[in-house]
Amino acid sequence: MNIRVNPESLNQSRRTGGPAAVTVAFGDGIGPEIMKASLAVLIAGGAQIEIEPIDIGERVYKSGHSAGITPDAWDSLRRTKVFYKAPITTPQGGGFKSLNVTIRKSLGLFANVRPCVAYAPFVKTDHPGMDVVIVRENEEDLYAGIEHRQTDEVYQCLKLVSRPGCEKIVRYAFDYARAYGRQKVTCFVKDNIMKLTDGLFRKVFDEVAAEYPDIEADHAIIDIGAARLAAKPERFDVIVTPNLYGDIVSDIAAEVAGSVGLGASANIGAQCAMFEAIHGSAPDIAGQDVANPSGLLMAGVMMLVHLGQTEAAERIHNAWLCALEDGVGTPDIAAEDAAVGTQQFAREVIARLGQRPKTLAPVSYEPDARPIEVWTPQPKPKALKRLVGIDVFVHSNEEPDALAGRLQACLNPLTELKMITNRGVKVWPDPMPETFCTDHWRCRIEAKPEKALNKAMLVEILRNMVLDGVDFVKTEHLYEFDGERGYSLGQGQ
Ligand code: NAD
Image (cartoon, rainbow, N blue to C red; front, side, top):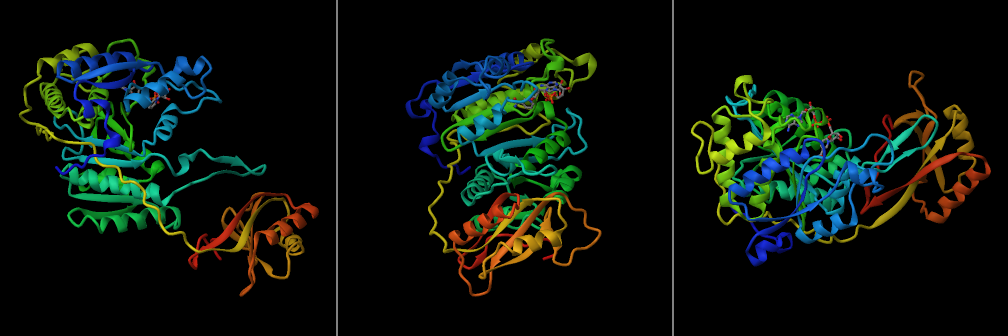
């Protein structure tokens, strides 16, 4: 292992020794019972932690905090920098923001790390050799939550991808691979369609991969990549991918491993980290003492590794593997006659502390393991940015020819209407009669060759449109950066 340390990411216990303060949320539904069971195992296994309980989730939402968390809870999280979280219930209906998204973004938890491991033959799976880690970007992409309704018929969601965001997650994936002795990192994107946003992720991946010649780098388009992950997960090692794809493929991978109830995840930032099970609050089985605490317990093991308590992490992880090997499990994984309740399962794991599995591979964590250093974005020289046009999005039920005529009358002699698209497909000039059109038109106006454009001219053109009653609902400037086009062409352009 070769793990570098970022002092900012250290919990107080790292700096001073002694028990680590950890913020703990017992959550909703099965949360309290699986947290109770998990903490019992962690403490019996030698975890040195001091718990700061906080209340989050359904009750907090309903008491008027729209994000499901109170200011006191934020204070605890900022103080301890480590969050051990049971699942919560997001109330149905409008007005409630996703607590997970709020926490991830507010605390800068940019990396979601989810190991997906098969435990055959003790947990049923078609892929006994599977051992994949999904590293999902956690802050950007379509999860920016910037959505608008623009016309009667059309709604949009903005996909935002930044170079520092890509570089942080891609470097983290390669550093993770090095630290945990993994051989290959595969990038999943859809850069054949989203050439700028996913193209940037892929470009950064290729640049960073060149700095890690000891790790094999590979890519796949997300659709075929996800299909292969489902069919032949043994082919993959570490997968790095943007937020939405990561959300989907990490659930596929957990399901394929046969162990959604066993899955754990770490959400890592430069300063804070959050550890949780991948499943939800399972209200259908809450309070019955049947929920599997394994996902949350394994998240606790990841937390102990993060805290540098690797001896306890190793002891607990191996004891848990022994319990699986002995056929001990909650009803979701064990044979009917061998199933035990949530708290009894914890006691069975505790009874095996100090043992090592015989069939499953025992785990070992290096004694001096440290959190992986989070790369700090480096300032890049600013590109030379040149305004070359504007896309004006118009709400209209006119035919494209009529709309084009009206727009052309609003232009100045230095500019021209280059095209009109409808949902990205060119419909003017030369429309195809088969193309289905909505009431939302993207009208591309560009400077004529050799002519310079400025924002005052654009404002004048838009003013003319207002006077002519053109109902524009949004504009996007077209720029070149160091002479390179910073916008996509229309389909068919
Ligand atoms: P879920 O994961 O809670 O449950 C899906 C199915 O899996 C259910 O049949 C459930 O009984 C079973 N299951 C889940 N965890 C289990 C466990 N540990 N042991 C045994 N069986 C288990 O998903 P859902 O029903 O779609 O969501 C329920 C609530 O959880 C919703 O309010 C949702 O918003 C929330 N949720 C929270 C988180 C989180 O806090 N991280 C994540 C996902 C969903």
